[in-house]
Length: 319
Image (cartoon, rainbow, N blue to C red; front, side, top):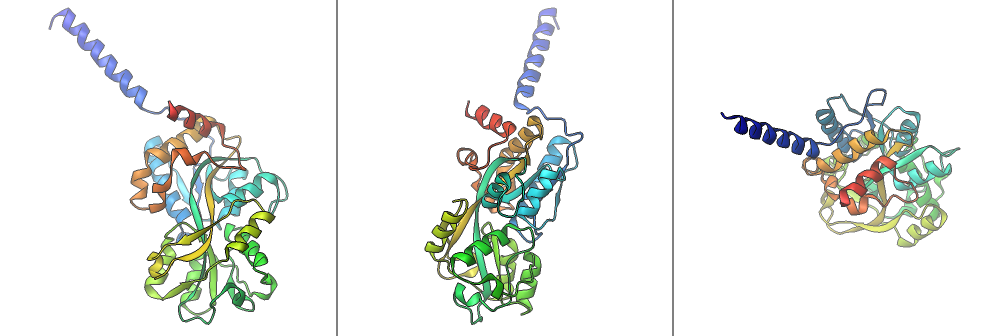
């Protein structure tokens, strides 16, 4: 090979290396950062989504990222703020309470959003053969309003207040989703409330074994809850065919955010958000709600501010 050809080959090889390095995202230093994602119940969407995101981050970064079983939104927010998880899933209403220091939070927590992911739907689940036909009839019954420190419990209390149902009249065992499903199946409780993406895997499994019904929610109650609280809620329908239902069920929805501590390094959060979008199609094959992640909508996390690392990613992705 002539000297000219050798130089040309070297130049070509260098150009390829530069091109590949430009396409490969730079990774932050994860040393000292938690490698846990705060998920939720193993039968819920949070945990399933978190499990696949953890796998994607592990493969991409060469670190061991795992998902933790938790009680849900409030628990997740507390864990992330304490540094026990690098990111966590949370309902928009609970996240808004956390940064404002209201609701179940005594003081504001130093948290910011990574992305708005999808909308979650309030489920009021009873057996198909139950005598309970509307929300008013929950009074005096044994109904799980969600585990302690869950976002379910936040919404349940607010909805029942708006519907003029005395929360104190309900015998509430405070079960998580898996235990609620088992208790309804065994006839140990009359029903349960749950807030999650569509479909929630555990409820899908329950409906395949025990016929269920979902109670409707008056849109006026949604308006009242919004007026009293964060304004994060909207009326929504659970579509026909979900869990085998034959008619749409009117309910309420709330956005879901992926949250991080404000002092998490920008590069680490950029790793998370870039992986979230790059792996969206793969994750959606197992977790359908992941397909709803959208760059144009992901930035709308009010009243929670976006983390600077996430904001940098969204700005760069527009170029």
